Length: 222
Image (cartoon, rainbow, N blue to C red; front, top):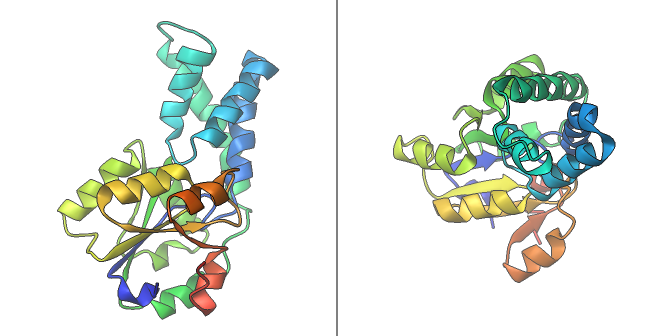
């Protein structure tokens, strides 16, 4: 697979562009901790098992299924979202950025780059501007509350994603979203929290790479 072949490269954010998966997991745990350690751990475990899905869906699951609140107060959801965002933001400002982004951008200078993340769209745009990453993504930066499937479909319909296109992600959901959209896929493994990624990728014939840095100096694909 030669990435220079693609007209569009689509990147997940957490675990691919940023070493932020553990930051997000801890933020979910701490946001839910006022409801007890058991409930907080259950949410953190659900988050890890459902990487790539928006925080809105995860907190709705927390309220309805973990806490068993049949008709949760909207203010409960807002408090959880605010607590999570505050904790996550502090970590995102200082977490490691993937090496090799600039080199890979030069290598694929004829391609359009997009971010399609499960993270909050406005938060990611603000963060990428703050950390001087937005300049790489000429196709835009997109996230929740819209799910990845909807974003990919919309951006293909508008012509922003032009095929052939490839999605670089680190979760099962990323691969499924790419497959549903008819995009090729590369699993980026170094920072993934997907414990069963090796078996999953083997079973589904998914192309894998350790990191963007590896891709930037060669194919780096196995």
